[in-house]
Image 1 (cartoon, rainbow, N blue to C red):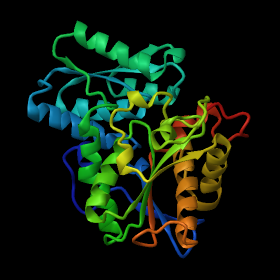
Image 2 (image 1 turned 45 degrees about the vertical axis):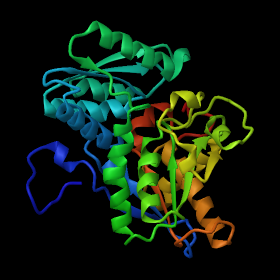
Image 3 (image 1 turned 90 degrees about the vertical axis):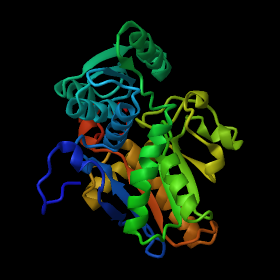
Length: 326
């Protein structure tokens, strides 16, 4: 986050150190605090992995100066990588399934990246396959692959996790986060469990996603509107380690939509559907800690609001549930 007391050399110096703000609707006995990742320069949590992964790949020689980063992405990761690539002297190409936010794709283009669309019905698996095909066709191209690259987890272990614990003086009872690639939750969870092995760790997914099956839950696969989290094929999400997670909570689209609208109306928080899901789940966990159903080491819950609602206005995010395209 920009430090108003000191001039900075680059927009990359503003990545991270985002505010941690209380969710006012949570129980007073067990407050919930959310990292507001829209304060990053690209307005999402993915700026963290964009900067961290590009810097690390350059440092390790996996990516040469002047080379090309090719990434399959729903959008925010592309923006984060595009910002980092532009500042660190490499090119960027992003493979994006058609259904994802037009705003995100326009921003990637504005940042100097090339955007290639793949059919919606092919999902992220199709985007991943196409990214690797392109990398084989281009000299000096690498696919960082946020879904399988340990640097994704490491970025949050090194930055997001420590920031949460510093802000709360180490008193974190539970960590609750939406799970897409799983990098955010895994990185925070690894850090949290090192600080206190009794920290309660909760993965959040949309109803219809299949992460719950990794914890033995018999859930049904279905389409969902919540964007940026969840999976139809947990095998694709190689970073997710169920052993680090106490439970997976499913949030219905309608509940996430209600909560994101409530956050705007009552708390001035302009966040998107993944944050709505995270907030609903975190409040539920806080209530269970308060009621003695969860034995957490501290009476507090930390969660993450990954980005802003402004990227989803074209999809009617603040309209009725039926009008919201997701």
